[in-house]
Length: 129
Length: 303
Image 1 (tube, each protein chain N blue to C red):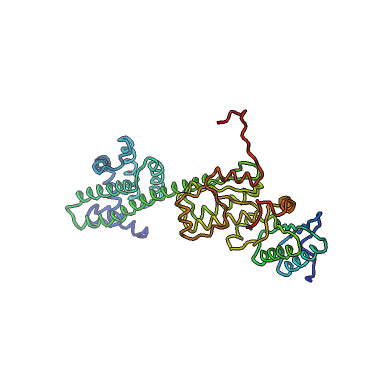
Image 2: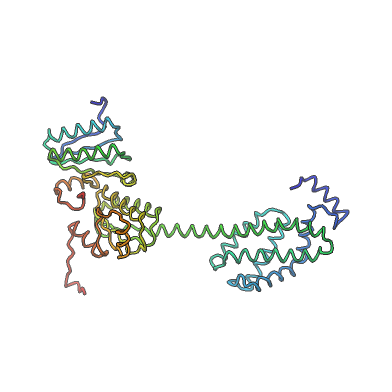
């Protein structure tokens, strides 16, 4: 475990978990985030996870890969994942560098993300191909 | 360039021997005096030459008279002072006035060169009996005259480029509107050639629009794009990907048969893109995605 305060929060909201990243995380903190979150999915029996990255003004390749991995792991543990709050500049930089979130869905903000989970994967507007 | 002291010396020499023995530095003031003295005749000769050469036909005779007079005076002044600043200023001002009337670069350069020739010819006439002096007169006159021609041409071209830049800027600003048509639905009609810079700007504006309007579906209409190459197609793919990262689906409409052919031929991967034939179809699909149903009411007196 990395010592020091957590730079993210994982809150339970009904059947869903809301994971907010508060500031740019370095690689060990990202790993800690991943472990905590995957563990909590089982513990809380969550059906869905919203990862809020609105506070981040940069997402590097390790971060986007970690988010993608979290999505895959969550799916294996029975929860849908949606990433919300990617800023315009971040989105632009990500596609320019050829990064994406793989099979993990994205939504505009927390509200949209929860609506997406509520609707299940059938909502066409944000479904990944 | 000579030092001030030398100038004074040559001045004194010139006082004693006003013509053939004058120092080279004294020649230009002499020239200037000559050109001032015959101003009217030379100017008219010049105007005649301009007319013969069919230059500046966009201007009326009166304007021509006014402009040729000021150009002439400016010209002589530069010969006198050696400073092109005032001329630069005047040339820019003149360009600003005549560019909107369709005066071409070759005309402007042409009239300045004509003036140079007219003046050179008159100097030749005046000094032809003393060939060594004529040589020195021309040595003094030619660099200054060339410098003037250069200054005027550069000022004119600069001004034209400034106008072109300004126009490009305004075209660019006008050309990428992001329009909300329904709640959560944006249209982005693209008209004209998409280059790298414009595509980047367009993506930026679209992403910002998605956040501002909380859009979930975006219809990009490229009916007005004449041609698509690999770079542009990749830009479109990037725009679609970036929009998706922000939670918005993109529908591309208005791909012409030619563009469809080009895209398939150059092998851009468009499998991730939603494309629909025309804007109408795109809007209908977008409404379906957002759960809108548009019904036609008979009472409204439709078609």
